[in-house]
Image (cartoon, rainbow, N blue to C red):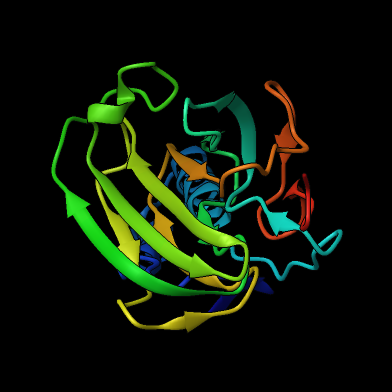
Length: 203
């Protein structure tokens, strides 16, 4: 799905087309320009560019800023990526995998950057990968009211392939296999399907 040369994400709402038609019914130029700007900004939010991985490792699942990179007592690192409204909101598979489980959990809609946002509405994924099990969670935020999942349990997916979309501001967490420390650090910006989170074969 494209508009003005922009590839739109699977799961883009149908009302986006109506947003582009709205300015036609408005006579006043300032209001018409404002509606056109709103339509362009909303279309940009739903963009879905093609991506090429920067290396052979496990990839960032989404665009955004790393807000957490911590190791648990089991030796597994959790990496959290916060997406603002200007980021691409398509979620991608970190590596080749088979979907073991996918569960939707109703919840709150607190700002996704808050420490208590783990109670927000979310979708939990569990993948079987050559490196071990990888868990991924998509969180809804204050404005994100829907998480669109593209894959089902049992599906085999390739590294960097699209698995879903979170509409508006949100967060994505990845729980890496044990003994695989991340290459990224808190504050770093990552690009989904491009930035390496961890090198394959890391000690």
